[in-house]
Image 1 (cartoon, rainbow, N blue to C red):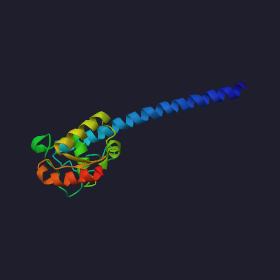
Image 2 (cartoon, helix red, strand yellow):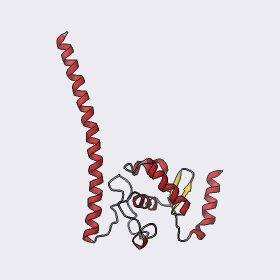
Image 3 (cartoon, helix red, strand yellow):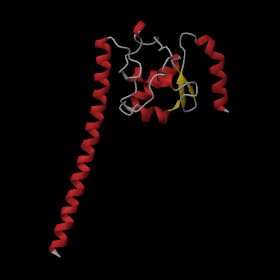
Image 4 (cartoon, rainbow, N blue to C red):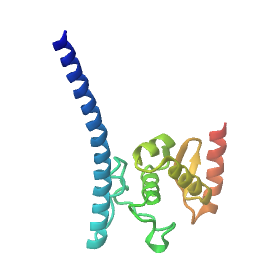
Length: 163
């Protein structure tokens, strides 16, 4: 029986080490993905290349729609939001999602490196300022500059979602 106990202990030890390494691997993978996005963004800024297609690449999210001009409104003046900031990536994700938008769960999955409370705060602020339109649990990009043009359509969509 002592050989069986030794093998059982060895198996338990291997499984524990494997679980510990898996946790460490996931942590390192997450950090590496963040660093790749930061490196690519900084290289684009330093080299003067456009930031199109970089946003969301580190989190598996959708990138900006090719051929569609990027919005330059928001918290960064004429430059627009920072491409590697959580809010900038959230705005780009919503703009790339089209008129149907994305569910809160899908946004959280695509921006997994953003804390849930931070994501909720950004979505709430963006919805109240008109940068995002909320339809139930779905969010789509809004148009704060032409909010008067969007008001009837947004009101109808919210009324439809409430029914």
